[in-house]
Amino acid sequence: MRTAGQAHVMRPRSPRYRAEPPSPLQGRVAVVTGAARGIGAGTACALSRRGARVALLGLEGERLSRLATDLPGPAAAFPVDVTDPDALSATAEAVRATLGTASVVVANAGVAIGGPLLECDPEDWRRVIEVNLVGSALTARAFLPDLLHHHGYYLQVASLTALAPTPLLTAYCASKSGVEAFAHSLRAEVAHLGVDVGIAYLNWADTSLIHHADQTAVFQMLRGSMPWPASVTHDTAYAEAMVRGVERRSAHVYAPPWLRGAQAARPFMPTLVTHYFRWAFKGRGDIPLPPTGLLGPGGAAADTPVLAETERCPHRTSGGKSWPYDTT
Image (cartoon, rainbow, N blue to C red; front, side):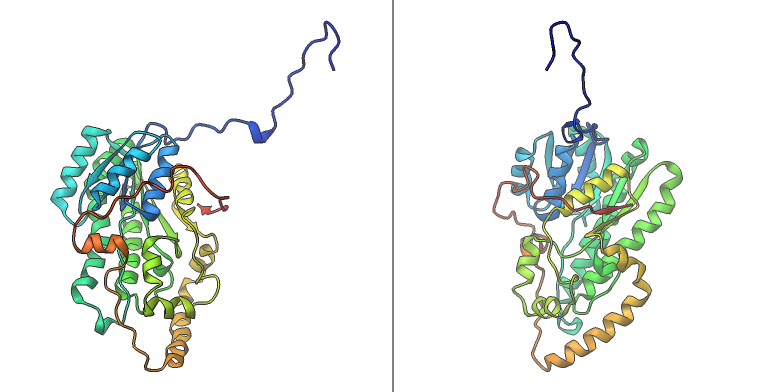
């Protein structure tokens, strides 16, 4: 208690009440592909909360428009097929005219199929490679002039399957190993020009694609055979980990953090996976594993570019307790 005339002494404010420093993303233009749902939508929301102006790219135009309306900051929807180079170039021009030149690009667009190689539809198999690998390269090419101008940052979404290729996912594993190699190569190509390139290694995420996949015999077999923690599904807090990686211009993002251990063990992974699933397949016998086709609503949109039903963004505010994801 102070007596009359006693000076008021200001005490340091508790750390829990100290203001967060402004994000380096404040006012920057960030491009997210595959932004209509799942990790892409979550990443767009997290970027917007950091003050970024977000360009939402994808095939599901109505969903993208609703998401742009829901975001707390400036955003715009740009329906585009990332495998179409001319359409991507036109979209890059439209982003510049609408929001400004991009400082950040998150190449998240992706689809998946599962099943034995001999039984998968060749067109579905090819589509996975085109969207996941070719689409990522075309996205980088379309926006690289902007990133060079701003000394920006490109984040490539990869997967645990780039570290430990898994049976019954030949197209997906090939595409994710491909985008990892592409990102490493691009990093070496543009580092001296001031552009940083990162790779996000993610495990199973709680998205509509995984919900659809878990209803198929292929993924029930795969996920039922995988040891803990590889079989665990995590929520879309992955998006927060990715955005922290963007803020730090990280070379690698591991979500969940134990994937760093998988990175260290990757020389042994192909042999371990082969031996593990040899016994898993023997135990299954002759039970068929029909191919899944392109998975999830996003896969359907990639198969036929028809607008899917709209749904408001479920990530408008941050939720759940975040993990200490590894961004280095």
